Length: 79
Image 1 (cartoon, rainbow, N blue to C red):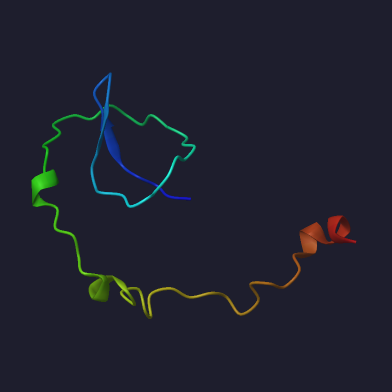
Image 2: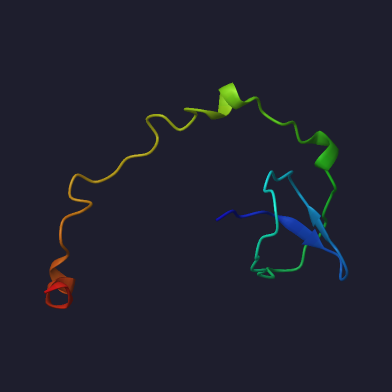
């Protein structure tokens, strides 16, 4: 599953960043609040090299030690 930002002008969707999904896909479109004061800065978006992306969240993401532990409130449903 991917999340992509776009601007809808009433007819077309203009993607705010490139995507690399191949083939036909089913999509779900959610309309958010109207865009005010939008400046088209797609020309300023610089694609980061893969070497900068891989590992960029190291040390910033953690998982609780008891992540897979049973939840007491749901115990009756799990039996």
